[in-house]
Amino acid sequence: MTVTAVVEDARPMGRPLTANRLPKWAPAAVAVASIALGCGIGAGAGLASHLQWGLISAALFLLISYGVSARVEGRRQAKDRFATSVVWVAFILAVVPLVALTVYTVQQGIDVVDGNFLSHSMKGVLQSGPGGGIYHALIGTLEQVGLATAIAAPIGLLTAVYLVEYGRGKLAKAVTFFVDVMTGIPSIVAGLFILSLWNLALGFGYSGFSGSLALAILMMPVVVRSTEEMLKLVPNELREASYALGVPKWKTILRIVLPTAIGGITTGVMLAVARITGETAPVMMLVFGADYINNNPFDGPQQSLPMYIWTQYSQVNNDFGYARAWGAALVLIAFVMGLNLIARGIARWRSPKAGH
Amino acid sequence: MAKRIDVSGLSAYYGTTKAIEDISMSIEPRSVTAFIGPSGCGKSTFLRTLNRMHEVIPGARVEGKVLLDDENLYASNVDPVAVRRSVGMVFQRPNPFPTMSIYDNVIAGLRLAGVKKKSVLDEVVERSLKGANLWKEVHNRLNKPGAGLSGGQQQRLCIARAIAVEPQVLLMDEPCSALDPISTLAIEDLIGELKEQFTIVIVTHNMQQAARVSDRTAFFNLAGVGQPGKLVELDDTQRIFSNPSVQATEDYISGRFG
Image 1 (cartoon, one colour):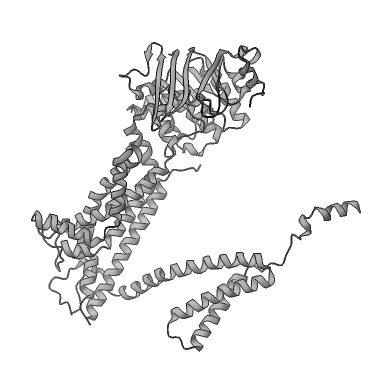
Image 2: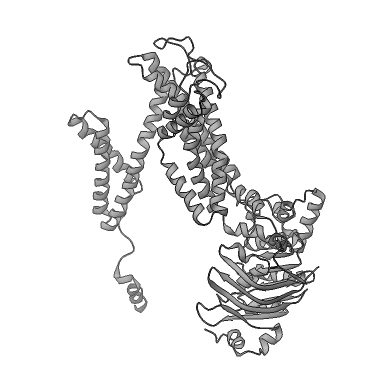
């Protein structure tokens, strides 16, 4: 008798530890029900946009989750479920445009992309007619982006090393400030700057390299920022361990700090490359565009994928042009995604291993 | 190759804050000297002045003299990198290089100093790992990452890395504070063996450890919060723990302090 009494008293303020719980499949069921209901309302009210159907479903999902949970499980659990539902809805809202864009581009572009499309230029091809390809634009993009990376990556990397490992006082603050300002430079302004400096003041003509210079300006701050963050993540203990072995500072940076952060640095550089690959404005201004193959980025106009897309799409009511634009868009997206995958692969391959 | 250290009138600063004031002491070669004292009394700071690691922190500076045998480490023409090659250091938390294998970790100091010959490196790895009592546990997985070892093994790996460059003095900043009793015992046994070759200075919060491993013990104290730390006394360990000459030492050791 006494023992039972003690056990009962031990419960915190007499509150039970068990309560009604919704089954595991409940959120999925609520989601299905609200989508069905949302589509029903949408169709019933004659709403043309499927986007509206989706938004109604999402709102219903939030309300029903909260309502059902509040009824069965109580207010506190209901708030928890509501928060979880908001996160899910936000996630789906973020993913929908991405998936839709990819799917649509693949649908539109896949028929055009073939061996001929990838290996031919537009030389001698009627803009309003079939045929032609993106070979010249692909070459141009690869060369311009490659040159821009070759310029911006080392400078950006060394700037970040300076800021993290050496920079103290006013100079470092000034560099950080200007890097921040550079991050916000619109691409057309970078293009104008190079146009006035390189092409007009110094008198060089249109060329792929001229575009690379503008792209490098856009890329540099991104590289500096991401590399800086990665270098800051390297624990100070590793630097001290290296100093304590009698290793000079520059060698510590080169052999200990950079290798430790190389995965993240590579990812940052690749993301910066991905960013400039899609730039159109400075390329239009500085590379000019061409419908023939020009393998030399230092002399004469070139083409690039974003500009090719614009050229093809800018002709009104030209189905062949539209198709080629979608094909080029698909190749561009695939190129950027490929870069991202490579960056992830390198990050995983080079990251410090804790494993056995 | 063990060397003697003579410190005279040494003060260390972090920016404008004085961390330790006017410390003078002698550290005997081929012996273990333990530093004990309350947190914030400057033991670690003082230890780091002995291989010029203190100045690695921005704004930190040192006044005074540290003689390694007869060379002043703080003379104007002394290269701190060279000092650190003769005075090695083991840190509180094991910090093997995460990108390197066990083998590469041990020879990191040599390889970064430009030694390339494989036969030399192989020999150093075996000798250092044996010296750190780690060879038996890892000799068949030298190419696995150093970060995959247990905490105690990682700390012994760091000791192997420190002795691989054959320093004259080995500084240890609370080397066992992140380890369990068994790993601690392994490191303490190792310290006993290492003192045959090296001059060892160890900072510890564990008074029993100081009593077990050291020949001489120095007690540091600070007058109050914000005041610089000072050396109270340095004597044979046995004397410090049985019959110290200063009342504050006895209070600290017997637990009547703060």
